[in-house]
Image (cartoon, rainbow, N blue to C red):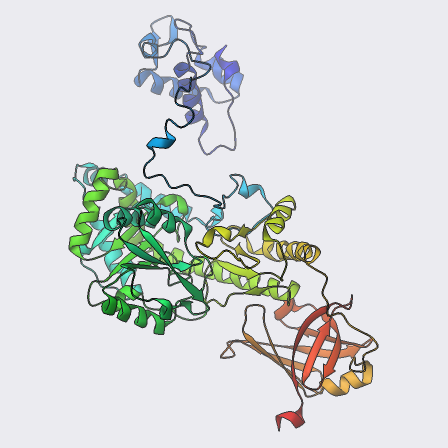
Length: 607
């Protein structure tokens, strides 16, 4: 009976009528309703499913209008037998595979295997603590705003506009919105014929590789760097050169000029997240002119700079047409949107457009128009500001949690923002073991081996992303990860020796700390200064320009130094055993294990 084959869900995104139509179509397509079998009346079907009769009537009527069902006068409703003519009478249980072995392997002339690439588990959203970069917390998607833009794009006039054949042209409205709304904030001025829409920045990279690279081409890439671009270079048979990255970005001094192309991710380098300094941007552009090079600037993550204004794009400084600029709307809105854009001289854009036409003609026109309307209505700017605030809060929470639970156990690369942290663990930590054991505890972190193309002696590093989990999950997740890292690391050699004369107890400790200034560093490499006043007040300054400040109180009890910030360290009190030797101060935890060290300056030493 039809009614026994149908199950409607109250929490579905589809209303009951749509669900009913959908399931009847599926049953007809699979020939699960025998031809000539009369369907139950709308009243009987509605009573059995517990829905309004009008819902069943409307579902039946639309399926009759679309030819799936037929209504016979004074007889009832039946499956339209004409719909079953083209259906297969029998499904094969197994499709034979005569091409096993080397048959296809020998024919894959441009295949480049992606060895050791980290693959996100398909059920990552089921994990309590998914610290994954590149995955998107679905609660952040601007549903109402995107629906408004989608609804407007489905107006009769809009459909007529975007659905007509246009060869390989892009939506002129989207081109204009990118030209006037997005590029100016990156300092870029471009004409319409210098802009191409792509299926994400990834397609832009693939098209460039197909057009520009041959087996005689040399391409310089960052080390560590984006593995997918390395694969695109290798697929075309081009030669890779590796330029190391430090805390100022790609080391331009290591560019010897022998490469034809230099690929960089300057806003937040993949994978270390460091920002290419303004000085190196200028130097890289000068080198391109000097060595006759082309720069491929992948600026996919330019909207998440939290410690100052974003640097101008390298493309904005380009006066010779040597920079190819790639941007993306997907990073801001959703990876599933797959809309990017390329900025380059007109002759190159024409060539890339022709190459794209052979691949996919153009990105879906309805998606382009929806994105254009989304931009024109101001939703993109509003969403960007909202996400910047959310990601900044999450990013700072992640750094604070690392600083709180893993003060000396880890170090993070200095960064001006982004949606992840590049974390270096203690020496001897086996990252693969860490990732595997973390997975068992519901924590997903990303190993970094696949980001290296030349270096084989890899540091004990991993990445932690914040775009994929809410703020309140970050601290408890890092707390659990800290316990695991400590359990997998070698026992610290520097433990408190209570027989040391330099271990200070109650009165001597109070005397030593009153009026002292403590100089140390955070786990993210920035200087931290703490002033301890005799009245128990405490003031802290963090950053190279004292960008972050907080106040709190300190005291001595039970032979330990206690401190509590108003905001830092989550506003919670912490206590330490303390050793002072000349101008060095060291802190130890309640288990007498080493926590941190710094320099202590008294009033006398500062005078």
